[in-house]
Amino acid sequence: MILIVDDEPTIRALLALVLHEAGFLVLTAENGFDAISLSRSHRGEIGLLITDITLPGMNGWALAREVVAAEPGLPVLFMSGGCVESELNGYGRSEFMAKPFSLPSLVTEVRNLLKEGRSHEVS
Image (cartoon, one colour):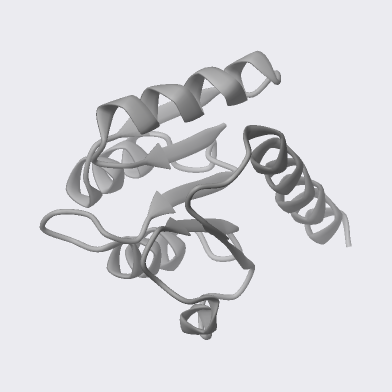
């Protein structure tokens, strides 16, 4: 299951639709606080967090720290139109996609992160 967090309803819905059509189970949240609540109620079921970095109330960096602290090893895909990839230091298994990005590249990145996660669990 993938948890998508973005405060823009259109972007959130589009990402959810694309990933659902690619065969993934998807949860969505519009802010960090709702995402933390969802992650707690679906503990152990979420295999990937996808979050925008610029969120109201709690940014994507803080959200990722909170969720990954409860689910160590959870991969995170950060998205932003105004951030640089170098800020990823300290987030373990994470990747960054600059907005705008193509939807096929999103699906590819998601598959790569989830595949890496499975290989880490088996080891």
